[in-house]
Length: 70
Image 1 (cartoon, one colour):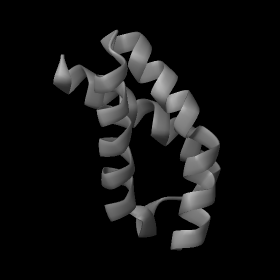
Image 2: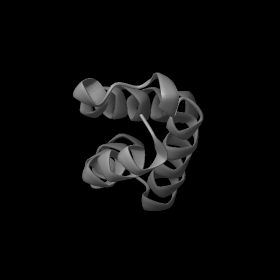
Image 3: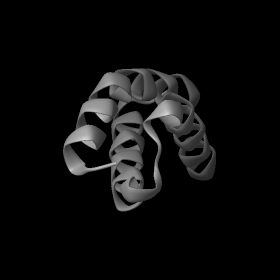
């Protein structure tokens, strides 16, 4: 997945990831930080990501980031 494809896919699901993080963490600032961490981690692995499973990857990853924070 190239940079343009990655950014367009991430923009589709960033709000979903943020809302899920806010629900888990019960703090908006922490949810914003978790979403930013998610973007950074996925960006580094963008060449290994397939767009067909991107939504699932985003949700599982944001959950794991939130659990690590808790």
